Length: 111
Ligand SMILES: [Zn+2]
Image 1 (spheres, protein in one colour):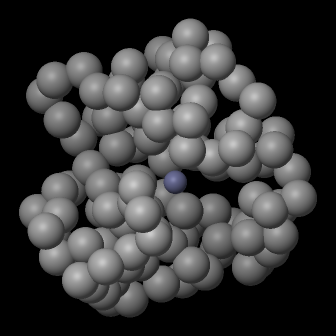
Image 2 (cartoon, protein in one colour):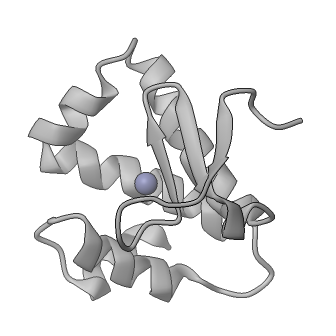
């Protein structure tokens, strides 16, 4: 069963195929069948519930929290595919989130 607040949309900010904002998941229609992407965004929704809604504040103000949050989400995502996508996700973590981390260090955290 798909989490009920999941919406399939035509566009998202450049470079993103899925997003979670609070309890709401948005995924590009072109990625509707990407179970890993869905699990990634679902993990962020769980983080939002677990932090009683302050997840976006922690995410915005703490790079340590943001890194922890993305590493967890990408680990969930990587587990959904038969091939090893961790190197690719490590590149995303090192380049798409304004985090001071190298690709190699991000990969280390995903392993
Ligand atoms: Zn994420």
